[in-house]
Length: 119
Image (cartoon, rainbow, N blue to C red; front, top):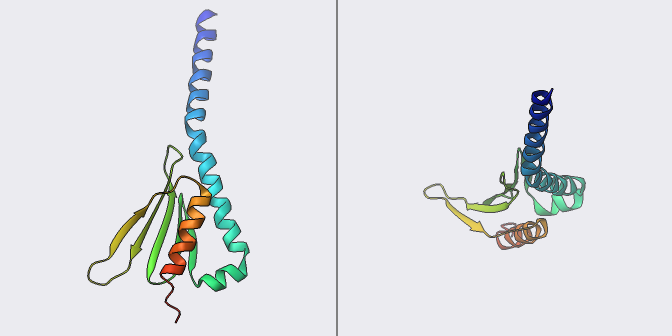
């Protein structure tokens, strides 16, 4: 049964390689989901931010009003953060370089303070 052994060995190696390739995405997505859950558990923070917060697939969305923030993870497990400055005629999308969840937290905090319109 050399064919049987070779076939199942190759299937096993392929499945292991695929799982290893997907691991960075799953780990990064789990960390982004944990950030979302942390935000949602902190009622005081949510009230202070005055923002709608959602997790849609692999994208954390924060909408405090004048801007719309998106933090996402790609298939390689890398984080990305963009924000849209809302405007009826010509909205502007900007990218903020991030590599880690703490980078995302710092960027979101800075954007929320910079674009706070509750005066």
